[in-house]
Amino acid sequence: MSNPTSTDSPVDERDAAVADALDMTIGQTEPALEDCLDQLADHDIDPLVEQLLATLVDTVSDLQDTIEDLQDAHEATHDIATTASAASEQNASEIDDLDTQQEETHEVAKSAIAKAQQLEADADHQEDAEQLPHGVEPSSSPLDFFANCRHQKIKTMFVEESNRQNTFRAISVATRWPEFATERTDGSGVFFTKDDLEDALLAELGSTPHRQTVARVWDKLQELGGTDLVHKTRQVGRKQDQTELLAMDIETAEGLLDKRYVGLDLLDGSEDKATTGGVTPVVTGEEGATA
Image 1 (cartoon, rainbow, N blue to C red):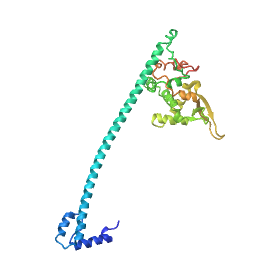
Image 2: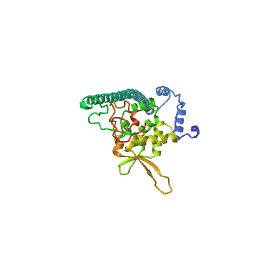
Image 3: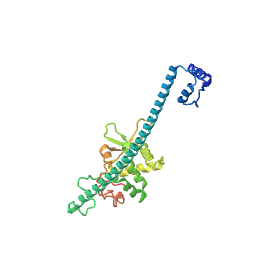
């Protein structure tokens, strides 16, 4: 950076010459312009110059007042903006609370309606714990059933109460097919490869899953899916290894996301029925699965 004292502009030189003629010093500690006028009163100054300086003093004073007014307005605007921002955050928090309350109210109402429909079922079926409320479709496999129940209850049943993490992981991965499964080009279905499964487990666990964990969850997913999942192999070229696929049609895949059993009391004892060919009262598939 150049030294400002060694490259004075013509304007600076002119100001210095005027200051020398008036016996003044240019610097940051200059006296106020009003004081300058008082000093000039002792000198023989052209009246026109004196009038020009007086006008300049008035202009500087007006500008100073304007600057102060703008600063006051800026502070007031800042206060208003701060208040508005705080109010906006509070409103957003209240909206989130209302959304949560609405969702909870909806679940309570849904559960109450479902229980009422169960009580109104035909008397011949009152002892059948497998009876579904009117309009609720039965599941087509253990995977379809568990995927449509409340996620937290499934986690409690398989992880906290029975220590079957891989079964829970298989159900969780299946419901995340929109993120990790590959959709067929014609839109007729989706499929998982083991690489897809590994990516989904990485998202679930927060760390890279062990190869043995991937294999076990793959087996559990195939068992729980029953006839809903079709095991296939694919080979692109002769020199490439075959790739295993677990495929399902798009209707089955979308059905995993319906949450149609949320709010219904259908989980009691279902973890024990996972080995008897019908994980729950609503499974219609012929073949069961081990949980």
